[in-house]
Length: 282
Ligand code: YXS
Image (cartoon, rainbow, N blue to C red; front, side, top):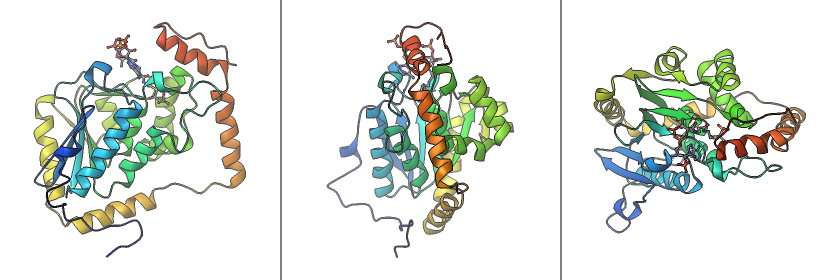
């Protein structure tokens, strides 16, 4: 039964292409009782979202779903101080090239989570930065330890962000709180993130894994076809308001004026030189 944007749970491939054969090193994937887990496994680089880590993460999502996962948890290693430091700044393009265009790895990763046929849970301990916050936003729920923090930092670096990303936050936490996160670029506490709807549950760190596993078990115990159909409907119903062609072009012109700017280059240069940026507004 193949309805557009909806596929029934696959029968796991027999032998041959096992999950283990798909193991990577920047993420570790495992499957138990139809609950998949993906561990971000590059702590020396603060799990920053390099193109390679993002490709491995997308591959692991697909592999787990193909091997029968009914729910997938994305997490860092136990005790992580930084869940993910966001997009690898060293891989951001030079000025005059859109840093967050539709076909860039971060945007493809965010869509792969939103389009994953089964629910994806972000299990968060430590601090979350930039594009990694959008990764959490793209998951179907966020379960965070009481010491987790979330910071949206494009304005701190000189990046204009992008329309679909902005709407992820507006849809999750409302316009004013989304503006506060983006304009201030300051970390938001787990409690504040729970108050504004970004986080589903706050759990003491030592209970985070068992709490998340229990939530995943509740999902995995339900009818997989129904869960998949409900997720597919949520995805289609929350794609946001239509905008006319001229508005889309105007948005792109506004964004281009930023990623063409000297400030964009200065923001990245300052980060690499470990100094505060000197923005000139041009
Ligand atoms: O000096 P080494 O070689 O040891 O490297 C340092 C940092 O340069 C590196 N690192 C990163 N490298 C690439 N991309 C990153 N996002 C990134 N973050 C960190 O990791 C090594 C240890 O970092 P350090 O010394 O700063 O550690 P810390 O414990 O003092 O501070 C941890 C953080 C996470 C508070 C700090 O590293 C930080 O503020 N990182 C940047 C967080 C951020 O703004 N991420 C957004 C990236 S841009 C993005 O996601 C989107 C494009 S957008 O901006 O649009 O949302």
